[in-house]
Image (cartoon, rainbow, N blue to C red):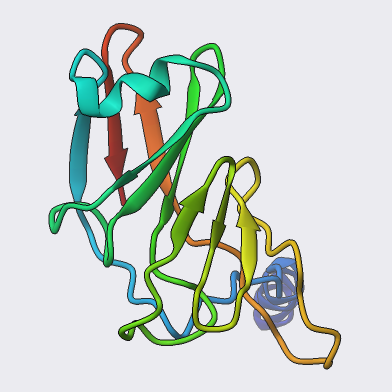
Length: 146
């Protein structure tokens, strides 16, 4: 009986995945929910595919949130603080069309996929944008949360 128990335990141990998500050491993941009413003029650009807005609100993310409309009923939302260093005076990124740029090192990220588009080739680990959950209710509200 002990042998069967040991074999089962060994099987369970080996079946566990060793893959884990590496958390960004620079950005604390905070819990929040922020609703975007698409009827408001501030957010009206989000009614057009490919348009993005910066939400500079203390209730949304660490340094605000970038939101982009990526399809008819899908939105993506990303933290506005550069993911490759701790938040500081230059870490809030600037919006340029469908990309955002960190003024500290001129890192550029795509809002369609959150990827760093110009990583240095120095062998160091670089992080992509921290993504938040964006849920469209099918009417006029996009809920951003973490």
